[in-house]
Image (cartoon, rainbow, N blue to C red; front, side, top):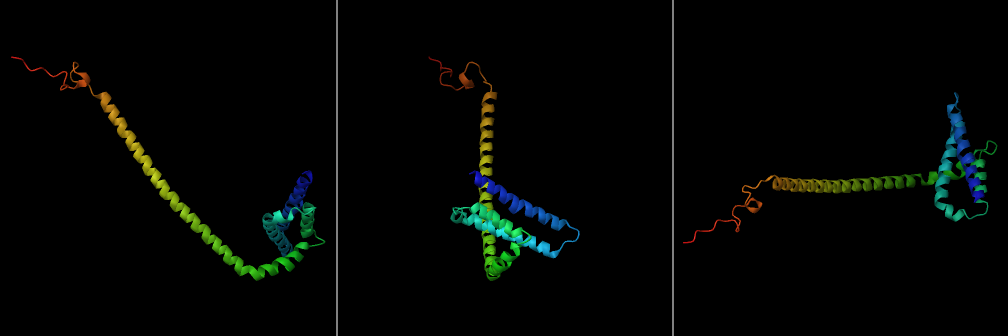
Length: 182
């Protein structure tokens, strides 16, 4: 557990922080060399591919003994000035692979974008329909509550016409005048 934690610290420091700082220094120089920019761009492209590969394939390779140490060693190999591993890995592995599959990757990306937009459009439509329905339900509820409130106020505000009749009704069967008997 402690070894894994230390490896993660080394990966963050040597794989991300130091190369990011070196890239920053290269970009901020007054006279930027195109080769230096190319080197750091290649490094970050390789890092992106390594992260994607590791994220999807870590289950299959993380069980190897000293996996973390090998990962740190590879990251240092990529940016270390004497080895310039980035140029070698980029030129011999990544560039030929991407050159062969660039159109296929572009097509897949376009398909995924189209699917995402379709999903978002359908989701927004459903949300609008559901929101509209809930809005009208809320208006109906408020209207019903308003009617109940009005009816309750009318009952309370009505005054009985004759205090001798129950509930103010004159033609109550108990209170009708009796016909005169002859």
